[in-house]
Image 1 (cartoon, rainbow, N blue to C red):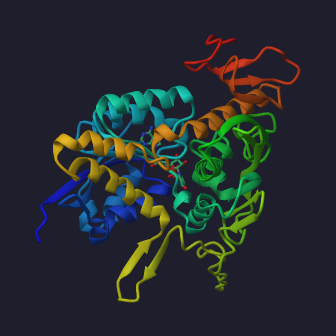
Image 2 (tube, rainbow, N blue to C red):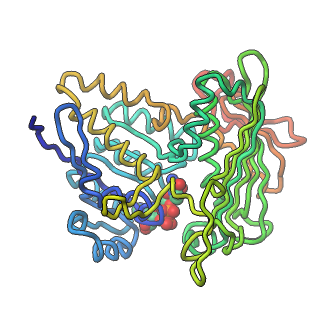
Image 3 (cartoon, helix red, strand yellow):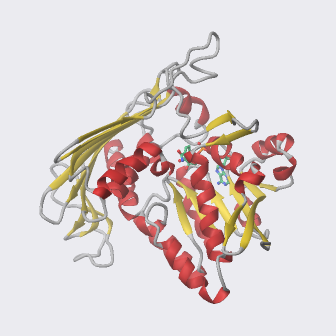
Length: 433
Ligand SMILES: NC(=O)c1ccc[n+]([C@@H]2O[C@H](COP(=O)([O-])OP(=O)(O)OC[C@H]3O[C@@H](n4cnc5c(N)ncnc54)[C@H](O)[C@@H]3O)[C@@H](O)[C@H]2O)c1
């Protein structure tokens, strides 16, 4: 049986750490990245790259295999606009978290499918604008939450779905990045940023996706620590503890603490420490991403060059039993899956039924921006709570679907709230400050 060939042309915005770990191997693996959509065999080509300086893109082009080395490199402050004039079908956005929104909006407006790194955007208002732009353009806008594809987290959700684990009540998640991340890797954009927005979103999404959607996000509080990355009274945070509460329809509540930081010692054995614990009516689930099998020590190489407790599920380079070299893992799998979804929309059947395919792909809660409301709400709340802390008002609480608005912040001792997002259906859609 012969299949017509189709090619999806992709653009990449940002070629930093996450590009190296997940997108680059995906684009490079020619045979591995080809797949079927309807009757078509679909290939994905990296056609264009946009970055601030062009230095990293040039460095990559110099070592890239022939399959990816021919991309067009655009740099400078107007690189997004110029990149969108190239004939690409989809744009992947892996710029720092506070720069996702304008690029995503421009890409959707230009009629491109969009895949954006977590956190998708920082406010509910931005999310609504992107969804409206995607609807107008008839394009997908998806977010990368690769931890949902971690086999341990998939099994957790399977047990919840099957009723083996019943009714989550409380839990904690922890993700601690080494000091080198805040000191070196993110030095260019870290001022005024915090590790909760950057990494706690993985767990906000895991909780929301795994245990929802039949509950309601109720309230958020957070406490940030400062003094290592920046000044003790400055806007840059070392670590953040976020507390998120959901309400079930029957009035019961579930509460979660998410610990994040980017100041752990650089010689921490696994490099990044990640664990979760969830307590149910009938069970306790503990999962640790470093301590699930391998521990290795090599003179002169661990823990920096090689990790002591590596997570090979996320991303690993392997010599396959059949002799090939490969790089695979769930970090790469979710990028491939996005392109499969785009290919299904574009090539999965006759043009007349494209709207049905688009609707089906948009209904996927794990990555569609339409299902990202609660995560974006928590992110916006955390950002606002930390801003209040910087302004000398620690201890604020944000309420969701409050009578005064969709997202409403109360500072301790101040009866007047700040409406962070009025929301279409709020009783008082007027910003109070
Ligand atoms: N899925 C994950 O687990 C994961 C892991 C790391 C990072 N990320 C996310 O990926 C994004 C990037 O993180 P990173 O670690 O790769 O960061 P990085 O600092 O290593 O790289 C950022 C890249 O963005 C480019 N850039 C910055 N501003 C730009 C602009 N205005 N226009 C075009 N390019 C611009 C820089 O040139 C650089 O290539 C962040 O949103 C982060 O949250 C996700």
